[in-house]
Length: 382
Image (tube, rainbow, N blue to C red; front, side, top):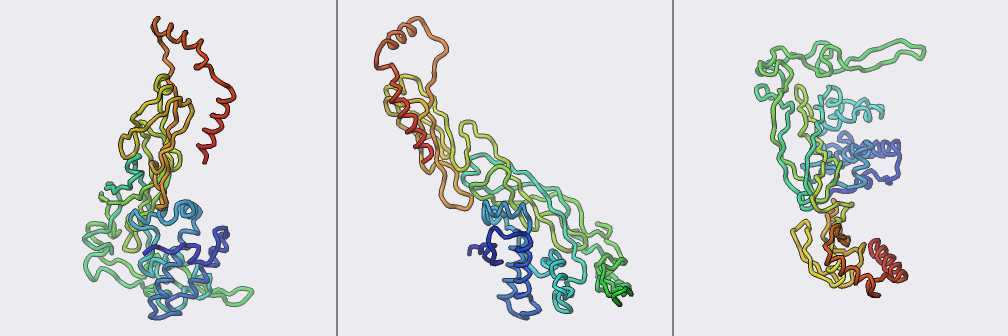
């Protein structure tokens, strides 16, 4: 099942400003919030869907990639783009959005409890992956080795040793927040802040894990398999959710950002989704015609060159280029005809060319040449 368009989810246009995107998300979050729709699975999915759309469209770089490449540009085929598996993810990402509603994380409901305690977030990792044109044309699965922080296997990421390794924070009593009341000119003002004792976690480690020393994470190497869609290009960035650094003492893993590097092909030049190939012919080949072999992404093919072919002519092989990253069509292979002029001639060859130079057949007709040039340019851009 294909994903819905992010702009459609938030009911906004592509030209919407950052404030309009935020307002649209707030509206959807209010409408489908779990506290307002208890037990409604459809509303919960729409709540997550709106959060995913906002996560992409509120980030200028991600929004630009999405506008250019669609869901494929967000890593949909590379292990999953931005997504939220549970409410913890959403409240930890967008707690400021919910606090703006004036409900303090929607009060004492499910969101309030999750919004009260701090949820750690692991940092993102960025790696470069080099691809050749054949891999780009077909799509490819790559296995890459990444050095990163993983959840500690001994304490399962908690940072504590044993089942009784934690004590409830006595300052915030497990809520992760402390309330302060101050007298101001406008009266008594109540504010909530992160608990300074437990740093918002609501608990304090009593017995630290011997492996991670209470951090909940250890450094190690991971081999990660990623599926890269066909049609990606130089500098394009794919997002593999949850494959970045693990968070301290549980929480949400960061993402793995895959930056595409494109290797140069020995014969073909990429121009968007089209491929260019400069074909050099000898003068006899161009004058009398010939069948020549040229390289393509799929392998070598033979093409016919008509007699009298002029230098600069473009032969178009449709569908022999790079596919669109969203899967809609393919580019072409454009063969640019060039005439190879020899730099060294024997005496006999010079005499032959001198005889040819006096023949009217070898003298250019400016009017015909101009017409051919215009036709070639027109065919190239059509």
